Length: 453
Image (cartoon, rainbow, N blue to C red; front, side, top):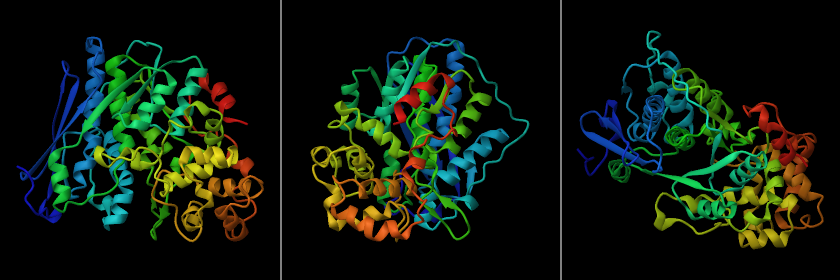
């Protein structure tokens, strides 16, 4: 039954995980959910077609990934009413911990904005008697690299190519920026398509609770399903070190992180669950985890072929294709941060040609730029870098004659830099690579060559 004209979140007591189904002929996954017996949701995911027939081992692994995808993708539907009861099949203790983490931390911003204590409403019960058998697969030597249309995934794909990997690109959907950067690369790309349940969209319009979800967790599992279906040994992401830093700390000490499912904690939790309950044969890791956004921007600045193709602005990735922007909006946290990170390694005229404007010479954006460094406001709820690297970028620009007289840089030199400790945002420290990552040893020499000066 569809939602009524007015959706009252408090009217629902139980969220039900329904069935999931995979049609091998069309490579389509169907995921079902419900609120009590009143509202049903059905999401479809079209995986890339053209895969070879599945042998029993690969089909068993695919089923394991799709079961997990069904459980994780439920965040998009549970949040409509946030009921206190969950109806789900038996879970191992490891999986129950994993799912609780995804829902509680992945919906942290949603809870913060809606005034909901997600941790008090989410209860996944684990049973030590429940075990799942992991299945080994024959290696293929192929790598599936996620591409999102921004600078990070470009640096990752070019690093993998420089390492001699057999690379195929992957995306969920086909926004212009993704298609454009993939075209510059010249590499093959597999495309999956996710269709959110129309009943959820109707519920949102009628008053359902809404907010940010851990979409990278869902995209990661769609990528893993594609890797198993098409025969890849690893799924490679381009999530950087700063994704693990939160946006705001609440009075009780809880950290809210807009990018939680891009962070290292999620990466390690998913790797652990895959290895113990699905398969140890398909790796999952972020190639850029040891680097700051500033270091990645320095590497990307050398890849000029992509500069007029890439876009990180969220306006270019809206779900409603009719509302998608063709390029940078020039007035959002993503536009500001990417411009700031690229500026120390770029000429002003070049960035003006890329973004359509010189954002650092717009005085009206000064307060929003300084907020990227946590000055007089918390870090924006967006996929932007660490506070330290925004300060480091301003330190570099303040001493750069190409940029020093730009309005925002002058304000940073006069207001921000005197207010922070002298060792906070030291460029050398920010640009150094961390050893806290899960990058395979075979790739480290190429990663270091690409991301160091």
